[in-house]
Length: 603
Image (cartoon, rainbow, N blue to C red; front, top):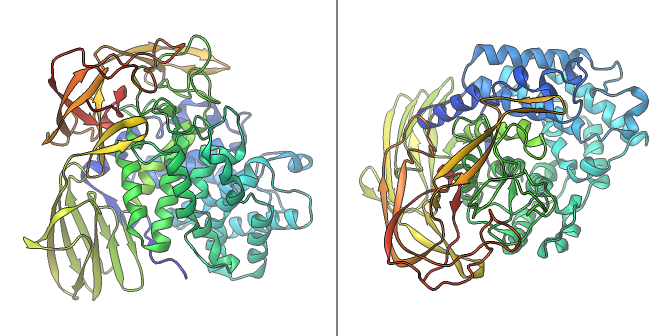
């Protein structure tokens, strides 16, 4: 079984509406400026400097490149090319690509060979630069020779991320069809970790750091069978679903994440999830949908993209958290022992590089790769996977999606074609009362035969009702469609500008502590939930102007604080006895909150 669907390139997809605004905010924020202000990218060893020579430049390029091309931003495109040119210029005659001394290769964790190979593939798909296949061929051939001869081997990150190289391996195999690429794939799997053997440790969180419970490794791993089974000659049997169920049963959050701060952390609403894992989980779901065409992966992708991703990044996208929490009443540095299982006391602050800088470089792949997943195609069929504002424009067809989804439940597809093909619209699984051009329809997908010369307009409408979702510990979250809602907490931002380890934090990329200025100790006191649309502003997931709210009835309770902490709510309320009259409050989209209560009891 090959892929059910194939990806389009950045030259064929044009983000529009709120999605383009979000990408522009990202380009004007940290992602679009790291090469100017952050030493690990600006002065990296990858381009001849003396700073980081491992994962940070490849991580950054993996998102910066498609961001530049999706926005048709000539300055960013030129800056991306300068980095690619520099990296290529330092490639050794034998094909070795990474910035380390030749005699140190055995000590260099070569997961970054897999990562930079993926970056080259992304760059080729965006730019069409004909140097890249040869550069990539030499890179992976050298890698194969070194692995086969035993001069290097997978260990640590490379061992647990062996499948990351298959994006590039599959690309080269499709181009050259050479048997050594199959051998390389087999070596990687043989030396790589088997997550089926790791999964028994996922059922009980430990205050212990391991590669097999590391949340980013796990987010990447979910796509492993989808990207590797064909070239390995193995059957696809939806291994990801089996592993996903274990993760969900023992480590879930209301927004479809798994807790991991930094390793799997159980079902507590006050344990965090690392930002890198959000974008890697999204990328896995994009490939899982492409592989299978199964709606569950697109549904899960929406949950992450419309909730978890924007929630952990500031509105201007200049700062971010390392970890986000479902119930997060403050983001203040812990003066003593960290709340988190394996993260430090600043991991939940918003800043340039709280805790570690990996997320600083890596988070920027989230929105661009989502945009690249809005449309996919097979032999003579096009599907709109993500019903967000965008346009597909190829030599023989143009499809424009006009919508404010997920904030409103109406989508219009305008199709212009110079060829015969089938257009399919994916309808979110939660949709009820589905109508197409006013006629009742089923949820799932809707397909239309498009004839050459035809201009067709298709309007899809549906409903989504707010509902309570049962969570562990007798708590509940509120969901409407793909959006999760939280009690927003008024916030004071305390800015910190300083220099540490030669890294400068200054506005707008300084650090912030977030201090609560409103009540948060509520319980739901009524089953009635009322949704209200407010319209989408220039900042789609604005913390000041949320595009949608839900009105709910609540009463205050004696919730209490987690033992030993003054800025963390207790995992579960100390008492659910009401201490106030009933009142109506507004719930905001989880994505629009920085301080929030998402899991509450009912009384």
